[in-house]
Length: 236
Image 1 (cartoon, helix red, strand yellow):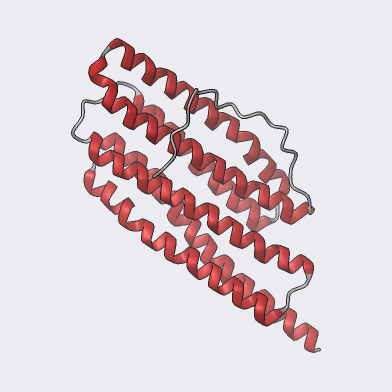
Image 2 (cartoon, helix red, strand yellow):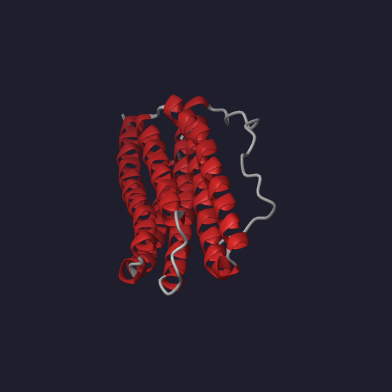
């Protein structure tokens, strides 16, 4: 009877933590789309909202970590339950990084609002952002549903994001060669596209954690990366 009570308490605690995680995921999805929209519309106010909103995402990650630590300390979860708690912690960390990248994108939007528009770049980046957001939605759905097949599909879709990034990189390179006055704007846009590509990597990591949670094994890491650009620009 006591074991049943402990199991029930663990389930309630986990449900509460998952609620926080899903709220965090929703905020990150919104940040991804809003950051791209602020760029396309040159909407500095929306970009500022994205930057300020990152604090809420950070606070939720801290809350997930605190609650998960409390559950481990008080409930002494079994091996499988502990794997679930650790998965939640890892997913929240990836969500927090996606929020950081969206914030950095919004910072660049403020700069680009004063620069000439580079033809086609905003549309391509918005398309890339939409793909990453949909991947994230499906990855979180896969977690809630414990659907490793859906998670595997998300992992494969990261190739599409890589290909979109490579296409944007080539477009920006062409603009810079044709008109050197575009160099500054194109460098900022490349930074933004690279941030989007990195978001895709973190979403892929979330999906990989789902596969591990369901199957007990990490997915095969033989999938080649499609990012063939000669250098990498990291988020600050």
